[in-house]
Image (cartoon, rainbow, N blue to C red):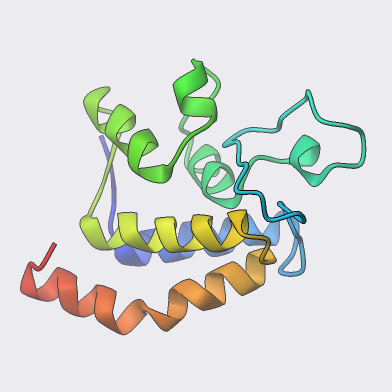
Length: 136
């Protein structure tokens, strides 16, 4: 089983960002719509047709297959990680899970991938403290 701690989550998310660049805007209208894999049903030119969301891209780069069923293709990072943990494929520490959720939320609200990461990084001291002290 793959274990994703806070530092690994940060590295994976940054590597995923490099696939499209920091100025890439996955969800320009900020409607919260997100797929972990490319959505081939949207119009040509829609960024969501090019790639999955930043978290989905990161997990795919880790070698996790997100195309096995509908539940893995869409939904929140919390739902996805529960499915992956139940399948004994991957587990994330609480701090890693929250970090990825912060990135995903900012991306879904219309931030660029670089901007979404910057917002999550602002919370890094609290995430580290929470993990060290066992708050979550």
